[in-house]
Amino acid sequence: MSKDDSYDVVIVGSGFAGANLALLLGSDGKRVLIIEAGDNFPSNREDFMENFFLNTFKSPSSPYSPDDNGLDPARTNAPRPTIQALVEKDNGVPDWDNPEKAYFTYTDGSLPFTSTYERVAGGTGNHWMGTCLRMSNADLKLKTNYGHGLDWPLDYDDLQYYYAQAEYQIGVSADVAEQEIVGTEFAPGYSYPMRGIPKSNWDQIAKDKVDGAPLTDEDYTIDATIVTATPAGRNSEPYQERRVCHGNTNCTPVCPIQAKYDPTVSLDQALATGNVDIIYKSVVDYITVDSAGKIDGVHYITYEDILVPASSGATGQGTATGPMYVLAAHAVENAKILLNSARISGKNIANTSDQVGRNLMDHPVYLAWGLLPSASPAYAYRGPISTSGIETLRDGPFRSKRAAWRIELGNAAWNWPVGDPYVSGLDYIYGTNNGGTNSGSAIYGNQDYVTTLNDILTRQFRIGFLVEQDAEASNRVQLSTTETDNLKIPRPLVTYGLSEYTMKGFEKARVAADEFMSRIGATDFTVTASAKDNPATFTYNKQTYNYSGAGHLCGTHVMGTSSSNSVVTSTQRSWDHDNLYVIGCGSMPSIGTENPTLTMTALTWLTAQEIANRL
Image (cartoon, rainbow, N blue to C red; front, side, top):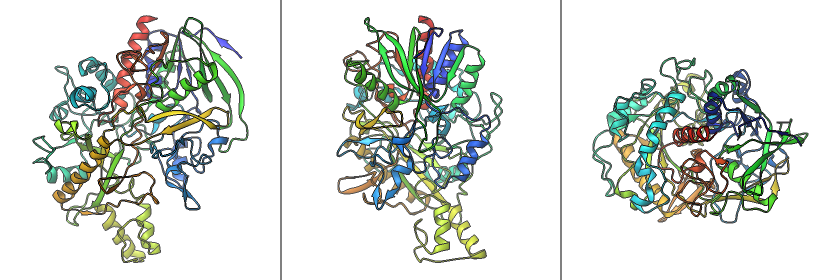
């Protein structure tokens, strides 16, 4: 076991939070070590593109190691949850809670947690979509304003400066005037780094048909429904030596030309300072605490084999030391490290509040999809996956009764809910109706096939309601007592459910989707699968709903006002250990309706400032 005392800060994880923190501290002359559980990012992203093209199962994780086709988590060195385990079955039995196929294990009665993440250099940010919406003060004070969930110990004014710093580091394309329409506040004279991404053809159709009166529901108090462009972390003009977006619809899982920002940009900048080092394929399993209550080491296990299943396991171990320690390994992995540290040491580590692992949140998504009339095709599968949304309905007094949501307009048509263009494409070859448009079991060839598919695919559209989930202590990550990975580290044990507050949000989303379909004159093809076919299912007021994960994992080490109600302070410092910071979306006490990555990055700027000042 080796120790290295030459670093000022030891950071676990190289995703959005870890890479940007390392960049800020390294630029300030601080010596930083990053410990990354996954493999290095290849020098040529064409390697990832090749993985994606050749992978028979297309998912956000398919370009990245370890391979998610038939993941065997017990025999994989750094496994993670996969979409494949959520949707596939073994002899008719779903794999989502099968520990031989799924990384997560579950308590009895739990619903599936349907979001995934990566364990590779750059983290989950490699496959993010790029949405960069700011949260509002109403989102930060959900408990005070509406009586649900938890409050932040910060106000919007505390974050506004750091939002601006994050937007310029990421390179956000948006227009201030358009964002002010939806209530976002900016400092006087502020402008985004780049002008907004143009609206897609589908965005324009939706705007022409939907803009105007509020949706017809007694809960809505907003004066107008307005489609606005979505701030995006991708280039509308050359920026930071990255190219302009070319409209590739596979920006999730990987932008082929890096017009979209990802954390490897900040990671490369951090390494270029000469003050930042990184070690790969090194999984942190626990941290240690001295007699004075300070963290005095980060223990890690090294490995070489990234294959599934791995032919070899641990190749060594080490302990990294320094005056400051930062866990930036993702909401689930941060909690897992803290809980495993307590298990090994027998001490209560960073958990006086008993909130470590609790308040797990996501944006459970209600999806709706349909076909536009022949006279106004959407021409989907062009442009980034989403370029516009409806944000004007996401706040109001109704939040005292049910969850809010934002409406995302999807440019990738039925790809998410159905798997098109592949599924419908095969329907008209084999006479099946898995996509829903071939009820007559027709089989076509030659020009008839091309004409039919062109008509269907060009008229497809999809909308998604990102439903707010309130923090509940019962939704949590614990350690499995029976299942480990190939390095013999306990895997996460998940308990997950949806509150009545969130389920009622789904109920109103369904009403709004019906109204949306009516306004644009569409034929609705939305299908709700049974629990047998889709385990991500719940019933509320005798109506069955499916939900999808947005990939927005929040909670598990929430910030608060004291050690009795939270894990970290407003600067993400542990209440219990003065030299430990636990950072990322796990610190967020509420999730609002906005994609959380921009807020996480803004918080990282705030935390970096405190650590630099203390050092």
